Image 1: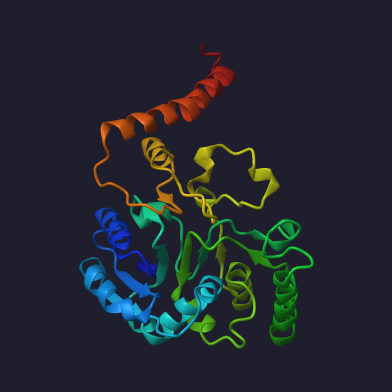
Image 2: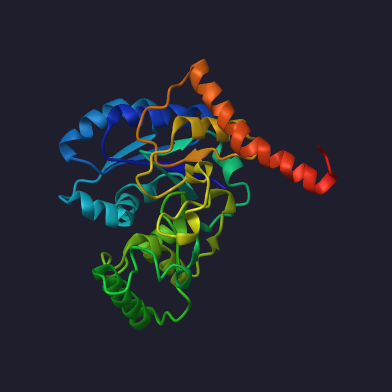
Amino acid sequence: MNLACLFWCYKAPSLCENRLRIFRLHNPTTRVFALFGGDPALAPDFERRLTPYVDDFYAFREDRTERWKWRHGDRMIARWFSDRGHALDWDSIFVLQWDMLVFDRLERQFPSLQKGELLISGLRPVAEVSQWWSHLRVGTQERAEYEQFLAFVGTRYGFRSDPMCGLFIVVCLPREFLARYSPIPDPELGFLEYKVPVYAQIFGTPLRQSPPHDPWWDDDPRAIARSVLGRALNAGKQNVPLRVIEAHRMMPGGRRIFHPVFRHYPMELGARLRQTAAELYKDEVKRRWWRLNRQLFGHK
């Protein structure tokens, strides 16, 4: 499968360069397409700075508010596909966000992803989150919009399945899905984190779960007890500390994708940072390993 990358950005050009430099170190031959969604007046500067790292640059030029772009990022991607992406060479795109770090080859991160499958992190039935997810709380405008969305797709497409949702963090979108998704009617009805999976259900697009990329759901009451290492992939504004990133990178089975990271990642970390990471690794990972060994084999 021809898995490409869509780098989605709108601010902090030097930070964007940092993200792309790191991604390119691990994915030197992957095709990278840039989708700039910020102030159109800044597009030339972003294009100049990002061109060394990307194969194509596209600027979304509609006059939209920042909140609209956050709630309807799927429409920005759909516009990219309609205007530019359909003519480029790819089968599926991994969406690399400006506040995300990737330290591995995409093929290693998604070894079983098949052509035509849609992957979204934290995929689960809406019924599991409807009582506490902020986008679905009863009595809110978001809940009313969700119910209006379900009524619309029920009438228009005869949708009667259990709706799915996920967190739009780690996402791979197949070409076939975007070709059908781009021209949907009433495209601004609903929120992308349930709208994208539901339309995949409507179109018969296979939905792929990815347990290694399960994110932290801030609203989930069961998530409170997780350690700091579990917050390496979250949809909130909880910046992932550098020591957590390094702790995961030291572990053979640790994460290699992190979100959100709002600061530059130093290409060469100092000894002090690595020591801090080693201590975190020892305290929260190695201890658990030896406890498991004692339980299984009686090792002391």
